[in-house]
Length: 324
Image (cartoon, rainbow, N blue to C red; front, side, top):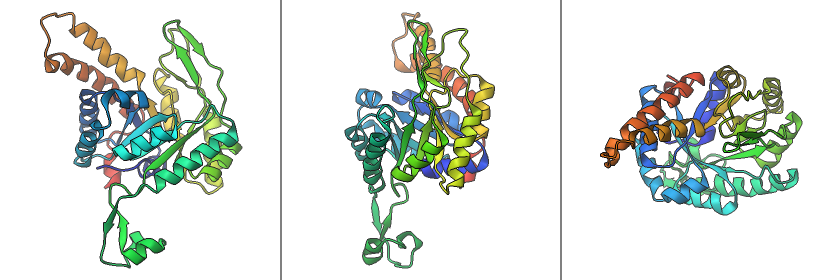
């Protein structure tokens, strides 16, 4: 079942769990994540960064859409950290159901302006189907749809948009150093940002960093800040769901607490890729192996073990039934 991010996360937010967003960069990883999500009856978000999209090509997305559309679990295909309007439009044209525009390094007003432009384009990216009944609720409130008896197709009602406010830390894994100069998201700024942009989901900064933390470093998530942001948005009348980037390597108890207190989407990239490629390095020591299926099967299993742990940790296992 192919859905957009807003539809997916509203249910997660209302039911107190988070949906894992796994970054994948080849078809074997994609199939492996789909299989473990279906096994655990869990909704899933498949994320692709612009650099990964350049690597695999946009034609890859048609295969993802076909596989996802026939899946019994809800699936979002999401552009992760789009850096430009061109990145976003490439993803929309390719068939992504959700996009992120990351202008968090820009000044507040510039971030708003960029997000506004993306929201207008993405929310207008609607595939229409002809319907015969002008009283159909799908056409209400839109004079053009009433006049022409057209309504959004079931999978592309519109493309959802994720923005980011505040900046998370970064990790130089080679040097074993953490740049934890985080610009934390303020609750009042989150309300102003959502009001001005109309974004569907908001990535916030509460103490995480991209990458894997060096041994001995323990990050700390500001759960009280998370609760305050979530409450401020709801008190202002917005149902915008919150996103946590840099979910790899954080203590399980803090991540689980974040999922129970307002985070509806948690990004996981490094954790599953380390499992996948460490296993591949091990398998490739056997110089007699050269066929992809002989090499990658064990890598997929190793990745799935990590993914299954995250799915259960976030409380997403067994939740696909909520969307039917």
